[in-house]
Amino acid sequence: MTGQHATAADLGVATRVIPCLDVSGGRVVKGVNFENLREMGDPVELAREYYAQGADELTFLDVGASVEERATMYDVVRATAEQVFIPLTVGGGVRSVDDVARLQAVGADKVGVNSAAIARPALLDEIADRFGAQALVLSLDIKRSARMPSGFVVTTHGGRAETDIDAIAWAREAVERGAGELLVNSIDADGTKSGFDLELTAAVRECADVPIIASGGAGEVAHFAPAIRAGADAVLAATVFHSGQITVGQVKQAMREEGILIR
Image 1 (spheres, one colour):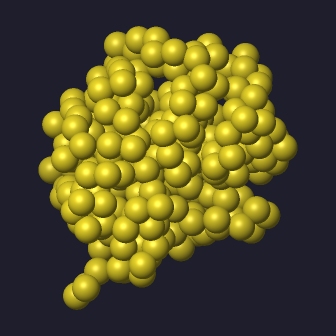
Image 2 (cartoon, rainbow, N blue to C red; image 1 turned 180 degrees about the vertical axis):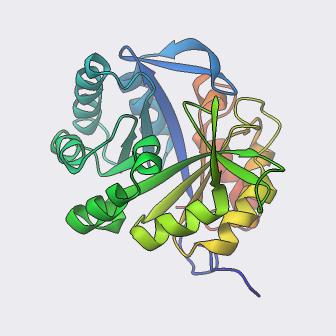
């Protein structure tokens, strides 16, 4: 593995398959390139279904993240944690260690942080110091950009606002500050069903020695194994699972047939 950090597969650790539920107003929603959201169902029912299908973890993203949405999200996480016994990651509107404590109190195992860490990077240190790196996922919404040395820029507001931050430099800094995992979401690929951004996954793998979750672009079972080969430790998808187009079990079987270690 010249110049690369070891992946889960290299270390003999099973690859994870993670359905993602974007929640707004207590319902699961999904769009294309983070726009034109449409309702996809009840989050607790979907979580229960994915658990039955063999999902290794679940990720909830509170896409509203206002005060009202936050209270709804706590109820969703609590109800899910009572019925689904796999790790739950919750992101959206996490701005302080107190937010993390409240989410853990209702059943979240990990929290995803994005915009608040961009605004104040020390938040990552604070969360890692209090709860441990294993509880902290940095969520990166990344677009291709010729402006950046790496060719990738960090975005906020669901990909609608570009920052002046190089995505690879930010990933490296976040790990140094205590992020235990990186959720690498390609805004360019999001919802397109044309496959994961393998170049982006590989670029983040080069700079990070923590687990990487590839996100954005899954459209068929054949798309998942290449993301693992590019350096991801886990694969995350939403639309293809919510629509019933493919199941978690089908993804796992396809990767198993490709020689990838699966739980």
